[in-house]
Length: 372
Image 1 (cartoon, rainbow, N blue to C red):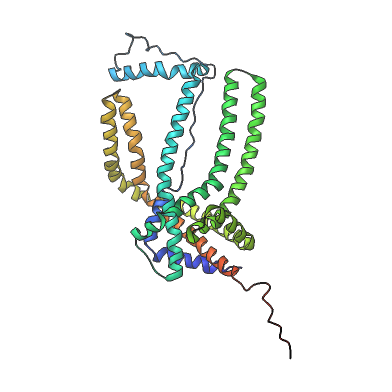
Image 2: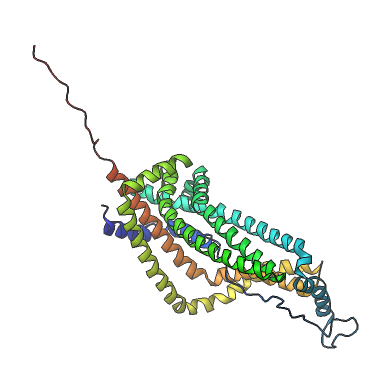
């Protein structure tokens, strides 16, 4: 059994004495995943919305030309989608494809930063433990910017990406079919769809539990790739073997880190209130940074379309920059936690590997000598 107390203390020491890791931790926190909020929309529900001012020549005098133009565009392009959705299936498909490719592009950009940073943290902590040597950011980034990072991504996709895609396809396809049948007022199909949705939710829970277990295995798979330069097949095979040999230590380590993560979540909640003065101070520099890309997009869009639409696009582009600057203190704290978590697992991996290096179970017998 590995020494958990020693591992946690050593990971804490590495966190506070290896400052270069803080930069990579910030990048991990910033590009560590795609977070999506929940949004609510309202359907037609059998209600037809009428606008008394949508007839040319019947505009209220308080509305300027830009608002009138925007409303005409809304009436021509958006309202028909809500009132007659079955006649615009192709439009919905195109919108869905547009969102898909947008998410794909963002995911590629995120992957090109996240996985080299993740690989670099693994190798820097392992190298520090092996030799006691600290490296700067440039040298550390080189440790991650190589084929190992790509293989870490591929392993991550196999053990987390595929289950995530299965869940997304199950839920989205079932919900989409349920909505279409509801629009068609097909009561039998709605009941069947609701049952299928319930089954899909149960299957999603099962897949989610499997995904949690696969993520635990990933702690071994990722390090087989990053630290030992193993190929994908060898990493999966040897990582599974290593887990089987140390499953008790691995499960206890996982439980300990889950407890630490819960504690960190509580600390982050409290820090959000304590850092309110810092957020207020950062509002001005955040606005200055965000307004530049926002104005660029607004200027370009206003040359080709409505001023209000151009303003909305400018705000959409500026918002991420604004949030990034204001939330920088919380992102930094999250980066420290990610470095600590990764370091603790790397130290646990090293101890488990050392425990597995034991004398052969059946040592060779001494040669038999015969008396002459």
